[in-house]
Length: 187
Image (cartoon, rainbow, N blue to C red; front, side, top):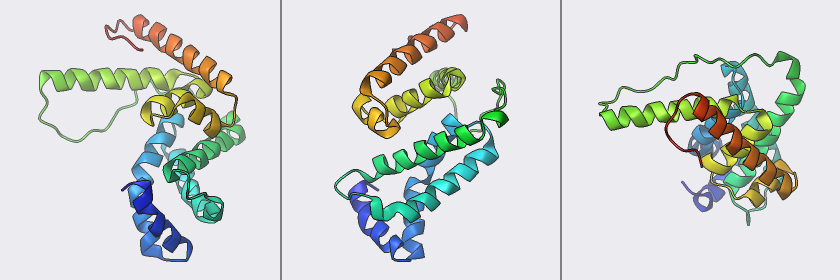
C-alpha cells in the first residue's frame, strides 16, 4: 500500500478507528521492524522501540504534512526513537553477537540462491559491525533508498556529514569484507 492509499486510513485512525490503525500498522510494521532490527541488537529492545514508534506516530499525526511522503515521516520518527534509546541505554549496550542465527523460512534452495543468501548474510553481518552513526546512513541509503539529502533531513545533520559517514562506511565495509576473504565488491 503506497502513501496516498494510506492517507485516508491514517486520518480515520487519528479519529479513533481501530481497524484503520490496524491496517496502517500492518502496511508499515515489517518495514519499521526491519529498520529498528538493523540498528538495535536486543530482540526485546527492538519490540519496545517498534511499539513506541506506533505510539509516537499516533500521538504526533497532527504534525504530519500530507504533502510529504508518509513513510519518510515514519522513518524519521523511527530513527529519532532509536537515537533516543541509544542515548538512554549507552551503558546497556552489549557486545555484538557474531554467531547470531538468522531465522529463515524453508525454501527449495538452488546453488545460486544459497550463495546469494550467504552473501547477504555476510554483508548484513558486516553492516551490523559498523558504528551506529555509519550503520544508520547505510541502512537509510541502501535499505530504504533515500538520497544523501533526505538522509541529512531525517538525521537532522548537514549533508556534508552524511557524505563523510557514507564514504567512511563504504570504506569500512570494503576493508572488513576483504578481511573475511569475500570475493564480492562493496560499492
